[in-house]
Image (tube, rainbow, N blue to C red; front, side):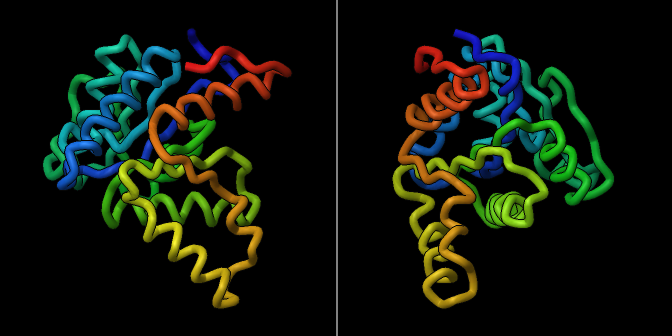
Length: 197
């Protein structure tokens, strides 16, 4: 069941590698397929490799719209996905993140490495600075985000961040719960709660 248009685009940050756990690849496919079936446009890093590629392929296979955003110097390194609905090539990593931020209504964080961590902390920091109030969902597939959450908790415990920082994002255990949360968020914007995915 397509979601209301007020929540129409979701940016997903995830790895350009598959990772060692096959559950990560399966989760990326499930998320892409779920977004496509829900009528939500996927905005992602534009690559054809790793979890990024699986995510995009799944969304496309489900009839979804996929917008890739990739800096020019990564076009060959991340094997730019030529089959997406539309592709934007930016001058820099910063421009890439700015474009993804501007076009997204919500952000999902999936398993990934240093680039994913960079994107995650920047989008959380922008929310802390009140540059946006868009939902941020960290999807903890097979416990991959445990240490990331612990790092934030350590900063709070050490007095380097306020306890309110924990409210800047939501920590969800898996893809089905993330898709259900997106459905509820879409419903809340329209005064109701559509059927969960």
